[in-house]
Image (tube, rainbow, N blue to C red; front, side, top):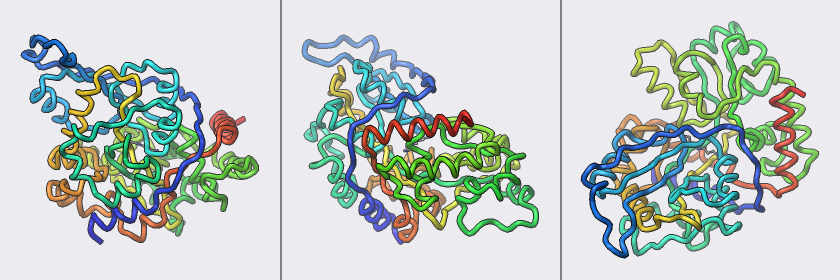
Length: 392
Ligand code: SPD
């Protein structure tokens, strides 16, 4: 299965999206401020020219080391780059308006909500000369969420799954064999009771956990029926005593450092934890698992807020990311797949051949496609998630 076929199947799995909603996350974004290029900072701004500044808000651990410095050096544009760890946090900021950001990176289903809410502005494709590098099949299917591909450009994509520390899990399970469905490792007390001593961690957001929990209990992943959430919650409540941590941005370090042995999280982050452990010559052997039930697919997309101040610079940055070497550089650095057809040749062989990064077609077909629920259901989901976390 080559990468293009895989991308096609991924795009085929994308579905249409539901209604607008907001829910507040609790984490504060960390901030990393890049240094402006000295000459650029000193450069005068000609009348009519945009100030040489670009404010970006993206997920943590989602960038190659040289992505921003090379852009700054080349364009003289100073980038302020802040990070977040959940769509809920980003969405709440956008709903509050005046974010000060020129590019934000929601997952495609959340971006759809933001388009519908009038929070984003259309791209000027005449400024995106590298747009043709994007896989046409993915673009065609993205058009289901974003008709005419007017607002979103893919950054990277992956899926939510189970990540493990192979040796620790083996030791904790003892004579018990690995389950046929790896989701049992985080959802079945038979397994979690054995694994808890070595640490179990979950993503810290309702929209990350519930679609998978619903499918696990035999319900539609994007159900709008409150009773289904009760069933999923009751399943989750049984494993709650065995969960050590709820963390979205912290899983890479927790796995690489041996603080936890099992995680419900993002495949890309599990591969990154694996690499980090290898780099640190640490004994932790981390693996992203492909489950028989399937994971939850997401595509994180670059979009421009409606009230962005540096729209021209935002287009320059998007066009820069769309360069094959730059997009491939992201994939090589953070082990998430990119949607750039022309970038394939620049992706490291090891990454390209990693079937947990570029999934085989049969596994792509099993993924839950991105989706949303109505506002009332979102509130139900958030309430059950809080109950789940607090153990109430
Ligand atoms: N470390 C980068 C994490 C990016 C995760 N995006 C997840 C979106 C899931 N819905």
